[in-house]
Structure formats: structure tokens, C-alpha cells
Length: 156
Image 1 (tube, rainbow, N blue to C red):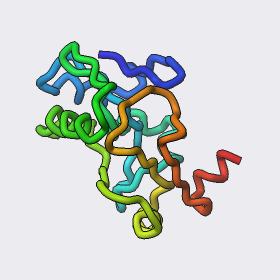
Image 2: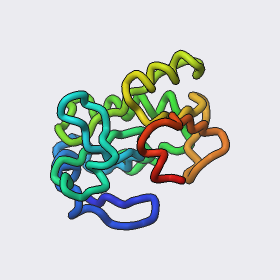
Image 3: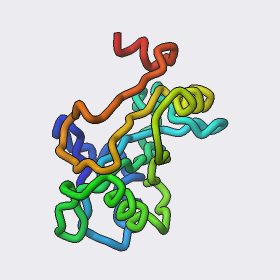
């Protein structure tokens, strides 16, 4: 079991709760794309400051966004909606420490953005349901951010 970042850093020892959860998944060989999060105690919304403070590493869990491989099969050529089905099946028993990130099907637009803002989210990423997973950042992935979110101050 290894946790590798987009920058190729090995964070297996940094986030033990995720590693422990992954070991409980019935399928032993899988590759997920996800986001490390610390959830707020009161509202359950990811807390960017808590994540980056390193004071809560034992609480960090994985929001699984996509599945890239399972059981020796490379799933990246499958369309997103089929990968999402496999991801939900893999994590159906909901091991504490890994959760399938909320996934809204349908058109993106102002209503979805307003709902994300009401929830206190920094933003979201939209992907086309029929596209494969080519890796890296893609022009087909639309990143929508709430400019007034505190996390935006760190990106400037």
C-alpha cells in the first residue's frame, strides 16, 4: 500500500488512516485518484487550513474521485461514468478513512455553483461523463472556484 502524490511524493506514513482504510478494501490491487481532506467537526466540510497545518495528519481521509486501475486492469480508457460505477462498487462497504466524493450527474451551471458555495466549498471540478482518464490536468476538466473562499488567498 502506497500513497503517492501528483508530484510523486510518497505520503504513506504521513496519512495512516487512509492506509489503514485501504487495507480493509476487499480488492487488494487498485489505484485511486483522490483528494486528501480534513473534515470540519461541526459542518463536515473540508478544512484546507487544518490539512496544511499538519496538526491533523491522523484525521486526514481520502475523498476518492476516480478509479484508474483495479485487479490488474487499467481502467483509464473507460468513460468516467463507468469508472464511477466501479469506484462506488469498490468502496461500497465504506471503510472509515476513504469515501467516494460526492458526484453530481448532469449539466453544470449556476445552480450547482450556488449549492457548492452554500456548502462552504472552495469549488469543484467538472468532467465529461464519456471521457477516458488521460492523466494530468486536462482542458476538458473545468475547475470552478469560489473567489471569496479563504483558500483562494493562498493561491494568489
